[in-house]
Image 1 (cartoon, helix red, strand yellow):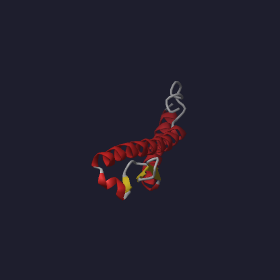
Image 2 (cartoon, rainbow, N blue to C red):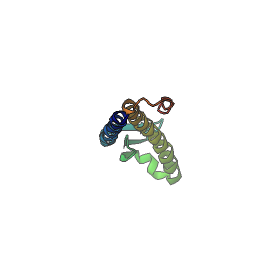
Image 3 (tube, rainbow, N blue to C red):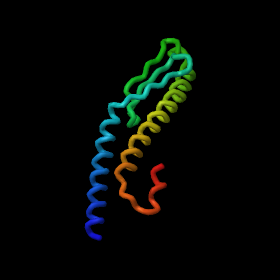
Image 4 (cartoon, rainbow, N blue to C red):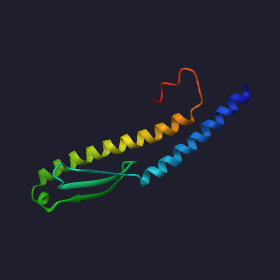
Length: 108
């Protein structure tokens, strides 16, 4: 019985380490998004850190329009980055979880 618990604890510790490694790796996974007309482009990491924003000069003439573009494009980029982030971490966590009855549906 204690061997099973120790084995599970070891596996959980290993999984925690893999999750931390995955989080670090996600700093280098880039997610690009742009407005439908291409006037505003942004790049985020999968950890949802903004790396770049490119704004067409025509958007600089209308502050309100620029703000609208920023909100729309950044929200879409954050959503994409979040999906990548959750999928990657979920896969690592699911792979490393011990087989505990009733817990199998937790990481789907």
